[in-house]
Image 1 (tube, one colour):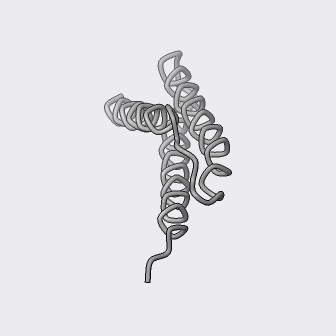
Image 2 (cartoon, rainbow, N blue to C red; image 1 turned 60 degrees about the vertical axis):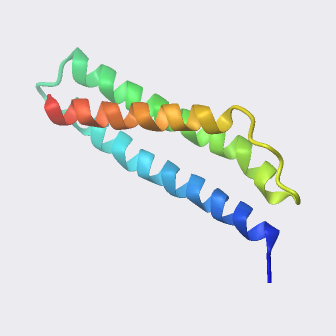
Length: 99
């Protein structure tokens, strides 16, 4: 028994999980910016992490309706953009750990 809608649902849920994980990393990256001795580097990293998370959320909201129709619409460039932004947020998280 094959359900073509199940793969689109799994993909939509994967996008949601990635967005929630990115939100956690962005919030953890922003945490040092609230320390009293925080400087411009911490503020820039926090801002970049939050901007990246906002971009991921915007792409996911734009992509979600395309996954609900049958057959699902092609993603276009949103998958590549999502991957690049996710990798950038991971790099920012790594930089925060090294500060």
